[in-house]
Amino acid sequence: MALPPLTTEMINSVIEQQLDLWPEARDNFFRLRETERRPMIMGDLSGAVQHNPARIRSTGAAVDAASVAARPCFLCAANRPSAQISYEWPDRWDFLVNPYPVLPVHFTIVSKSHTPQAKIPLDMAVMAESAPDLVFFFNGAHAGASAPDHMHVQAVLKSELPLVCLAETFHPEGRHGFMSSAESGLDLPFIFISAVISPDTDGMRTLAAIHNAFGTDADTGDADHGLLNAFFWTGASGLLRCIVVPRRRHRPACFSAEGNRRFLISPGAIDMAGITVTPRHEDFERLDTDTLRTIYSEVGFADCLPPPIMKHFGL
Ligand SMILES: [Zn+2]
Image 1 (cartoon, rainbow, N blue to C red):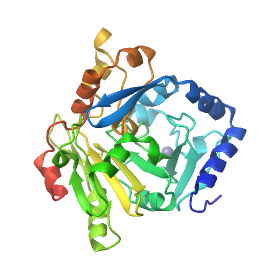
Image 2 (image 1 turned 120 degrees about the horizontal axis):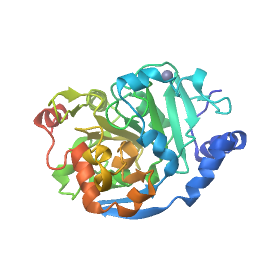
Image 3 (image 1 turned 60 degrees about the horizontal axis):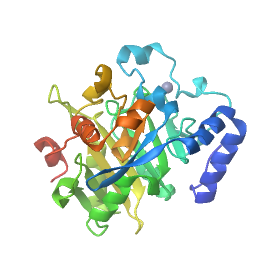
Image 4 (image 1 turned 180 degrees about the vertical axis):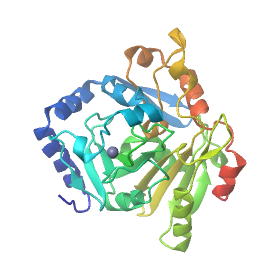
């Protein structure tokens, strides 16, 4: 089934149809209403921490090559539950309601072919232009993706992600091209790159640079297209906007620490955007801003971006 441009009514109707047909998704959706959430202010990022036990399958996912190869791919159409409705939107993608939502409107958009998470897919720009209520986000293969073997992106309401609101505040739409959060003097636990994409050849160059963006591996120093998170949405004046968060690690040290020092937190795009998901209640209760700043600084770049990344964006 093909979908037209995604209006607010269409978004609500897709969710309603899916929840009517799929009891497990419906249960998870209603449970989301009862999840505990508290504010987590880190400088200029007004985030929140959410206790969400159903997300353990994503946070705790074994993403090493052997584990991924040994399991059936849960994003391939042949392995998806029969109750899961699939809409073709846009071409070559399946648009699905996420059965383990972090936010009440939460979609997963899955490539029709089983190809790995590689560079940032520019089809996200097409999606963002056709669904102005939503922000589309991408977890690089080494930056939060729980299915690095199958290309997919996710979408939530753009009003729900604090990082999107922050980018709109400090980067005016009149300033086309890239801007680093560091140059704005914001107090943030990690640096990100914001883009305003004009509908001309400069905008095409901006998109090409986003597609080829990379992070830097903390251990080897190597550039890695899988070490980043990216967000696309339509801004207030109708221009396409993007955020790229260059990363240096997939997971923080506390993820594999012992005893009290262990926090089961594996930041993906949604966490970097200010919604930190803790599947375990003990982590929800004791997580404080200092610990979260440490987590962000271990997976992202807290003080400055490596020169090759700055050069890539012309900053
Ligand atoms: Zn697959």
